[in-house]
Amino acid sequence: MSKIAYQVMWNRLISVVEEQAQALVRTAFSTSVREAGDLSAGVYNADGLMLAQAVTGTPGHVNAMADAVAHFIRRIGRENINEGDVYITNDPWEGTGHLHDITVVSPSFHKGQHVGFFACTAHVVDIGGRGFGADAASVYEEGIYIPIMKFANRGAVDETLVQMLRGNVREPDQLIGDIYALATCNEIGDRRLTEMMDEFSLTDLEGIGGFILENSRRATLERIAALPRETATGGMRIDGFDTPIDLKVKLTISENRMHCDFTGTSGLDKKGINVPLVYTKAYACYALKCAVAPEIPNNAASLEPFEVSAPVDSIVNAVHPAPVALRHIIGHMIPDTVYDALDKILPATVPAEGAGCLCNFQVSLRPVAGHDGGRSEVLTFNSGGAGARPTVDGLNATAFPSGVMTMPIEATEHTGPVIIWRKELRPDSGGAGEHRGGLGQYMEVGAAAGHEFDFSAMFDRVDHPARGRQGGADGAPTTIAQDDGSVMQGKGKQLVPEGRRVMLALPGGAGYGDVSNRDPDLIKRDLARGYISAKAARNDYGLSQADVDAVLAAVAKGVTA
Image (cartoon, rainbow, N blue to C red):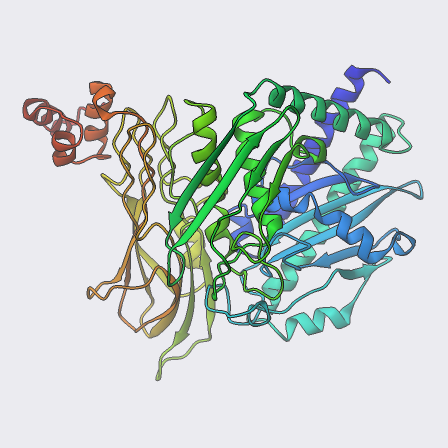
């Protein structure tokens, strides 16, 4: 078959898995999937090698899921793989890093022959245990564990498993609905693959799979071969739970490999912020691929040259039974740690540090005495600012590296008696520089009358804000308190009494380059848009009082940049 035909089929496969992902978005019960896109979807050959991934999704899911199907093949056994089967797990070490992610794998058959697999992952709001948060002391407390097993055998769902899961979670309809959505999206992918194979008269995926993997491997190796053969170190200190965490990496570029060694990183934490190596690998590889080969599609071959190692029982290589519920808190900081090293080898390539981890929180609401109603679990995904880039400002309230979308207020409030009283950009939170860091945001969170709630905080950058690069200023730190001024912790479950609100200021991204080089027109634009205050325009950016007055006067007249 010609290269042109194979290229057409490659693009077709990418569209197949994108439709697979969109089917999951449309059918999922959890807002984390429907509204935030916290998911992944992919197609694999019969050996379990990922051939294509959906554009919709997160690197922590899809890059970790790239390794997962091999575990399913090993655990299920090739002799037990049947048409109509559906497999499931939430194993943090053989899936995507914590119990709240459910991975579903379905074998794909064409005219009776096993040709490959479809896999997908979604974050579920509740999996039992202590709930989504950092408070557990071991993985056993974090929720119910589903080993790699059959959810459906030849099309027949395991009702015993369904009943066991329903009996161990707070939102049983939501969980089981999400599992069926995961299975359904794989089925959609399988249908589209069958149509494609019929259209191109394919009997298996060996030809197109070989073309994809060989071309992806070659293209990635060419990019790496063009880089300097150098080694550099990077590091970052972040908040941790009770004590700060040090992330350290040594990046080595060789002719056909880029290797990240996390020796020297802090050891395990007693609370649930530890990271299985599969998740560390996912985000370290993502960081390198973004910088070196961003346009090469993600698959097993394009990921292969990026290698990651870390000492066992370091916080980035936690092994069972370490608590790992909030593995994203540390995992989302890994790209900026890697970029601290890469910037020393490839200057003017990588962005300044950003907020890093998602600014998530979960509220567990319940009526107080004398009021009717049941309990509700509401998870909301939010973002601080992204770091400025070498040639352009950072993005406001945008998640990097996760790519997860911020949830609309309406969707959040629809899931329970939670009220988001305020949600707006946070002026002056982006670090100053030739290119300004992205803004964080303000949020004010409460509950409907007659309710109290536990607020499970999942924040970082409270004590260690994003650092500027190449002379840029740091971003603003996270702050969290109740509306009576009571300071709250950045992580952990905390009671908020009836009538109280949580006041959040989410962190900003750092600046890039010397602020004296910033275009004055951009400073005036930011002032007019409210991104910076008059004080910051004068003190941080050097704008004259006359220019400040002129911009504010124009804004008052309705003339904006």
